[in-house]
Amino acid sequence: MNGNGLPVLVVSDVFPPRQGGSGRWLWELYRRLPQLEPTVLAGSTPGDAAFDAASTLRIRRFTFPAGTWGVMSPHGAMGYWRSSRQLKAEIANVHPRAIHCGKCLPEGLVALIARGRRPLPVWCFAHGEELTLAHTSRELTRLTAAVLTRASGIVANSQHTRGLLIDQWHVDAGKISVITPGVDTTRFVPAPRDEGVRARFGWTGRCVILTVGALQKRKGQDMLIRALPEIRRRCPDVLYAIAGEGWEHDYLAALARELRVDDLVSFMGIAGDADLVHAYQQCDLFALPNRRIGWDLEGFGIVLIEAQACGRPVVTGASGGTAETLLAGQTGEIVSCEEPHELAVVCGALLADAERLAAYGARAREWAVEQFDWQVLARRAAALFLYS
Image (tube, rainbow, N blue to C red; front, side, top):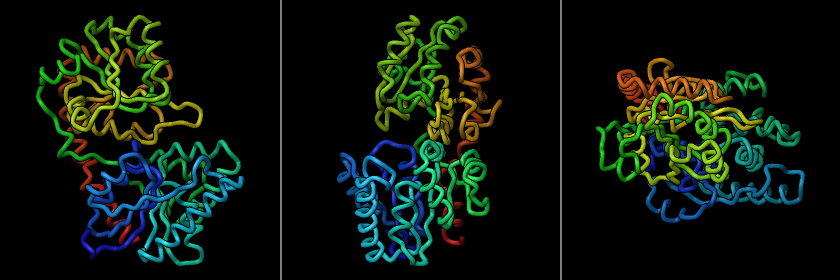
């Protein structure tokens, strides 16, 4: 901490070491903003003491309303009352010039309650899926709308999320700024083919499609498994490597057996930091075949820019904000992932065309450095927070 920056409170329930793209986005961003002096109030999670001790950020673990985002139940009301009292104490201690909230609920509402009548700006980050989730409940709709109305500014993670805020929540466009998540292009870098690493992953002699993400329906791992019989006809040595864990694991494994492609599917579990980079570098094609499931959608897709930073071509679904992570026809392809045929055709064609894969991969690295390097995004964020 430099002691000379603008003091701000960053309030986020999801924050490392807890898994989650939204918390990781905040951690990566605020540790690159020397113009600010952030104090992070983060939700507790196993392993947080060691993480906090090693971090360059000042992190305090905070108690957020648990089990519900609503206030109508005694449990919910008590949770918000406790959290707002705790935040009031932090405001008195830190004397921040602004409060930056990881999302509208619960963080934004807690901040507005704690702020009271103080002329203290409250900013909220918006990711997409929490906005569609809020529309499933009348109470959550009203609470989210109240936060969006009273917030000084909204940071949307994509143009798609900005559109949701304007079209569905009627937020003044002038209050919304788009700053996407980014990638550390000094860590996520291209590497030559390494047969030792590929052997360790069980990829020897295989043409590998990789997906990284929680095992949940919106990520679309099931649709790519359904596409494998057709992909295999074009690329007999294909292997689908799935990095991540989640409640869909047993279903996905059973689906692979049912379609008789279980020999083409490898479940890697949650990869450590080093293995994750190696997996990106050594795969032949990265795919996030996302689709919208009810209210659940992919607001951006950090894994897509990580893969591109490693020089890998990508394929993604035509849903949510993932299309904004790539240049269609130059670094990857966008396909409808509501059914498997189009996904199979696109992936099969790419895997069969080594020159196209190489050209897409080279441009993907350039694109990631130009648009999504954290230093580029940190400069935009600093300008926004200091001069708005």
